[in-house]
Image (tube, rainbow over the protein chains, first blue to last red):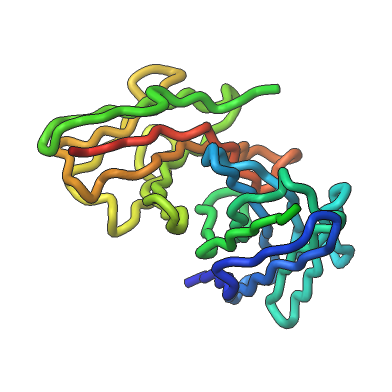
Length: 115
Length: 117
């Protein structure tokens, strides 16, 4: 069974600094999808960034980028120039290959951006 | 932009009462989900639904839970006799399964917060 592990329950960063959130996963599949979702205090689930496993190039979305290490089954999220609005819970998630299945979430990392 | 809508946003109920949470998935999506999140904890899969039947369900989704798609648009989660531990945020999500255009991305509603007293 696939699993997703986020080993950092809480992190903090100073505004304008860079922070990296860790995520590892376990799967026997060769193709799959990985995601980072942001959950602010409103508790809405907001997609931050997506990575397809067959693409070697790391995904980037403005200040957000990932370090995807397929062999190590690692998928970390880097937030550059942190802003107060980045304060939220961040979930790493895995979706298996094919076009059906379920999204599997990690435990989440609470990020506090300090002024 | 198309979105998943959920109602109610917050419901307070007494233990033992029945609750129905409603969702309107994105119109051309074919796969639907319910997830649950107890405050401050991880997001847990409850059930997936495809072609008018349950595709997969978790251990949490016991006989107290049921889902249906009564018409072409709504997707509901019913809890027959609520318990205190059912207090949580319930998220509906939908997935576009057709190729091309498949991204694996689930589109989430804003959630329905259930408080059981």
